[in-house]
Length: 251
Image 1 (spheres, helix red, strand yellow):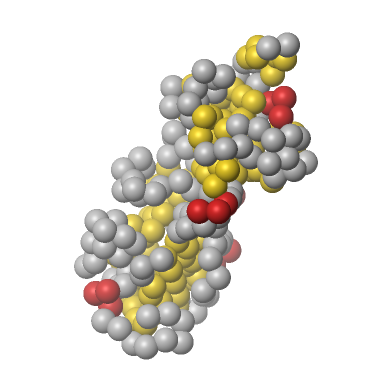
Image 2 (cartoon, one colour):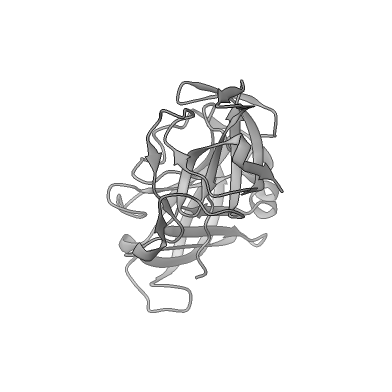
């Protein structure tokens, strides 16, 4: 399966249910078949596809785990129940026991008031495999695309007042350092272009490197003779790092 990198979803090492609020109503067949449900981190990806005939397929792949399920789904009280008929190592691959894949699962729409990416997520949780996604992670959390947070929305990110950028693409205008926090005194971070590629590690992000612009600080910050915002970006395999606005621009 082609790896789907969705930088907007940063859940490595975090239980996908930990930050989610109560489930939302309104799941029906149109919602399921008209939406694309994709999961992704730097090292893993997955996708759930629902058909009008009541069947579904769900696929997951990471550095150490791969599986593919297909079967029938039903909707009960705004929960979607998945019952696999065939589980395999990958699409078209060898049949495996469904206890080693997502297997039987229950899905629902969850709201996340703290997210700077999406208001709602579609969460499917394995009922029999607590390690379906990784160790002690049984849930696949996919953003609901039409709930994407629009540019210009005021949010709070890790205690910092920000204004969202709508995940637009940008680029660096010169070689620039990335930082842990929006401050010239904050720790600078190494930039990694590719995972598991030591040669791709650099002290700064090169000029003309594409970034995904997630948010900016609410207020401008003076650095030397400049007065600009700090931008929260995803770049290379680095998620949610800060670049000073003098050195990055929207494409």
